[in-house]
Amino acid sequence: MRGKSVLLIIGGGIAAYKSLALIRRIKERGATVRAILTAAGAEFVTPLSVASLSGEKVFQDLFSLTDEAEMGHIQLSRSADLVVVAPATADLMAKLANGLANDLASTALLATDKPVLMAPAMNVRMWNHAATQRNLATLKQDGVLFVGPNDGDMACGEFGPGRMAEPLEIAGTIENFFASNGGALSGLKALVTAGPTQEPLDPVRFIANRSSGKQGYAIADALARAGAETTLVSGPVEIVAPSGVKLLKVTTAREMLAACESALPADVAVCTAAVADWRPEIAANNKIKKEKGAATPVLRLVENPDILATLAGHARRPGLLIGFAAETENVVEQAVAKRLRKGCDWIVANDVSPATGIMGGDRNTVHVVTASGVEDWPELDKREVGARLAAKIAVALKGAA
Ligand code: C5P
Image 1 (cartoon, rainbow, N blue to C red):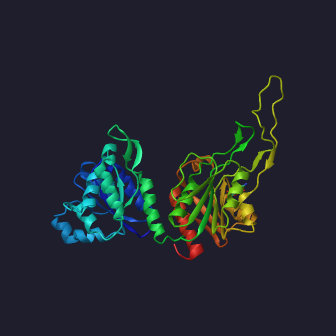
Image 2: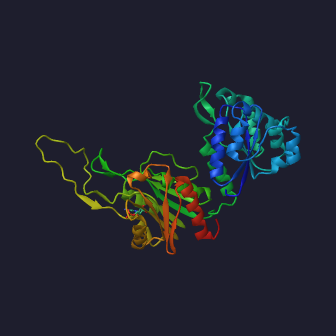
Image 3: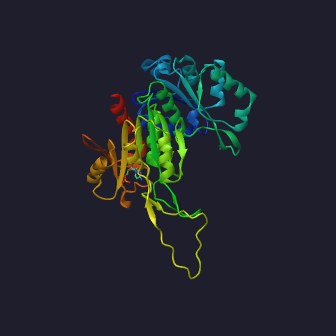
């Protein structure tokens, strides 16, 4: 969504505080945000916060002489590629459903020629009220898009549908919107492996590693946002799958390989999973008992399939095959050698020594090793690494970011 612009209308509700985070989530995906803050919205967040985060002037008043001189409200309503209403209050929904226009937000909504996405937020009874549901049906019929509301505890102490969708979910929906309207990877198939594998010793014990899956999930998310039909093959992790991604959950390396093969053919595969190199030779059917006087058990390990190397030699080899290399020393040299050894096209290398905090953390410093050399990327949020990698993949596959 680089280069796209969003007009964000912030309505008056406690969920307005989440709109501040939403501005950041939209901006870090490369789009610009211009905001209209309703009078009620300004009771919850300040124009200064909105202006600081968006980096743009905030529009509040329909009859502002200076605003009208700079940009008329009709022009403002059409200045963006997408209008997002978050929080969309019962009042804003009712106004648009009935064509009312008595303030800047409602006037812009009526005057725009751009698609509108609403993220409703209100008390559960207000949401369930026949009038709101009628307005919802009318708005949907008029082509307004919706994200949420979600079920959960509400600020008013009640429980049920009415919570505004989380900023990441709204940002994801916005990305989906732009992606399905011409994403850089639309029409292509992507496969991503992520997380650790667990290799059982018996029904309750297993060998695993500290992989959080965050980087792989961020890459799958970015590829899907760029319009690729994305399959994410994931070992056991604690994070939720990105929307718009086909998730195949696996436990062991052998299951991961089978799931990957089932997802072929693919135009691009990114193997971020921290696959266990070995598994116990025997996985006992019953829990191994500690018996008095018995010898301490000895673990015999056997090698697991190397999924990346298998894909590299596969009859249906993905067009672009990318591996990861988590190392604790000589990161780049090892990655250069690994690219050749594994037969993949690129290796994304990172230093996972405990001092870096990369394993399980939110940030990553990577080096991208290709046939033509090494690119050193700065320290970035893992989502940003995902977005940049998706852009680089788009250039490699389609010649466009
Ligand atoms: O050999 P090493 O584990 O360092 O290689 C890392 C790369 O290989 C990663 O892309 C990882 O996902 C992949 N890999 C794999 N199957 C294995 C071991 C590693 O796909 N059994």
